[in-house]
Length: 190
Image (cartoon, rainbow, N blue to C red):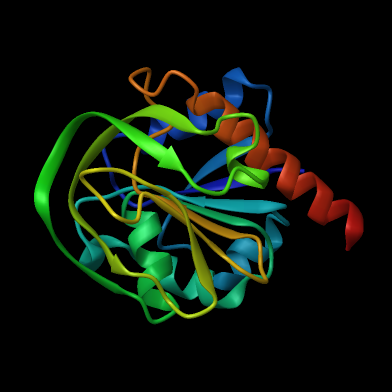
């Protein structure tokens, strides 16, 4: 029942794992260089793709997105990698964002359950998703970023541009709890 946190070398990747541990969610932080077989051997019920400084340093993360049919949550760079893997467009943000931001939750099912209609989050990014892939829908936006969060319409694949793992996102733990519920539900249905 473990969720693997894929370390994409971002400043908050260890914080993601720590946040899950505080919530008593079984987790392991692993490097993004593990092979598909090494990830499979760990038998995760979900993956969280952490942030990082660049797509070039994302290791095998895009392969994980394409290969695994388990719930996936991408945070910051992980969010952008999901968009890229499915054919969306990422580019430099019009406004680099390193601040508290209020997001508008437009779909509060699953990942944002209990959090609508607005949520204060910590934003720390210079790139963003400019257009979502086919088969995805926007879950949240803000005045700084049109795609703060999205979801695949048929799969349990989610992306969030902001950082739920830091204390500047007061209700970030709810997102992790909701993702864990998605993972457990999926695991019980398979």
